[in-house]
Length: 369
Image (cartoon, rainbow, N blue to C red; front, side, top):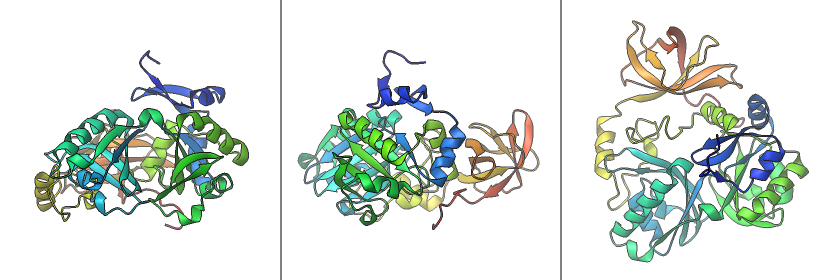
């Protein structure tokens, strides 16, 4: 149900014209689906589709000390990022727990754009402001600004995303590598176009002025016949791709090492950073649990919070995300289990133990990868 405090994206009128089922997500009114979420999922896997991601948080960190300040604030080595490139990283608490996972774009020598999850934008903004001012030797030459309200964000995701977008942009998309971006125009409107996404497919994310979002969306939809896709299909796509979701696989009680992305923690970067001591200890000790992929043997779907059981019925873990996989044709799940737990495993699905086989993440690899 929509509340009086729910925020609209710049594309609300578009979603209403398309007959989307809308839902309150992290304080934003967002399209859950437009028709069949399975059809939307399959469109991304086979061709391409459009997503409204304008609920994501955009925070600019600028100034000559911006890179050094982010090195202190985040677990990654952002000052080493070349202009035009992007990096997946995390904001961690002093005890190593994940406060949010982020994509950081270095848009210019002295400008970084930090993209946060909608539910955590205020936390990320507050922490960046506090950490930038306390970063050793870096705080005076750096400013932090919330640009969420000044940004529209549209994603074109799918194996044909590049060919669908190419006729409408001034950029040579073949020159934009994965996790890179550039300023140019889309449908005649200025935009930052990045080869990033959250579906496991090739694709682009288009950052633009809010007043230009509808024009760009309609141009992409009309010229390329791109269908729209909602939050429901985005979730099954990211689950198949083994991508963690904050609130499910990630949270303050989990470090990057449990989530299987310890490689993003740059313990070798110079100087201190928030959480360094705790994360170094966790790296030395090993994770307290392991994130695994499970494929159910029956049609019954494992859901968030369901117990993972050992052969003798003892609970050894918990499902963090689960859904039917349109691509694999079976229910799949990610789950945290004890580090030394060994299969075969079962999942307690509403009181009945359903066998499940362990598979290496991700469940899905796009063609050519």
